[in-house]
Length: 258
Ligand code: F6R
Image (cartoon, rainbow, N blue to C red; front, side, top):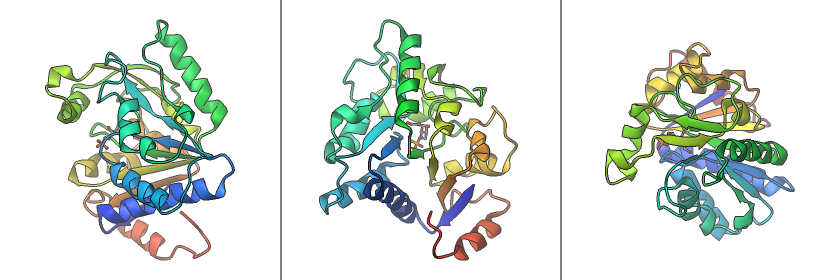
């Protein structure tokens, strides 16, 4: 796990956009895993700017991590709608190659398995991730199996409260979601965690330095061979080994990319 403590949220977004842009410009058929929520928005803004300056996503595919169950198709807060509005509709990635869970299928369990197969068959090159206050990635809440696949989950009260800012009322936040499992997410070749601000300091410390445990689902990243954790100074506040991470990044060999 490579932990990069950047001076500011802007630097975090610059580094993350650089990783995605490199994959898009060097791979024949890049597959990018997209997260929703606030954390990746500045990264998407930079990628949109790079697209306007010439970076093409026409040969790329994308997969989303998760989706609310119970919102009408096209609801403004459905994650497919959000990811189209905030990113995909502003670049030239063909919308038919934006894959997301079908939460309206009559057989939801079969639809989850189908989506899992789609993600595996595509093979995600770079997966962007945010972390929840309770240590979730995707919508894998505490207690999630570390080898789980795409399935339906129930949100914790903490996550529903955190996400209420996107809805008119807390009651409007769905209780159920479909999410890629921790095993599904771990199949991606490169995992890039983005976290900025004080509310992320504790979950990031648990993820990076705590025990690997279903109680902090993001800690499963400790098993993955290629994880880049991009955080700002504030989100790094609880890390015991912050000095070592800074030293390591300062002395990163010039030939070695993020
Ligand atoms: C969203 C997702 C979630 C968020 C997490 C952090 O697709 O997978 O795990 O990344 O809840 O959300 P923000 O970035 O809004 O703090």
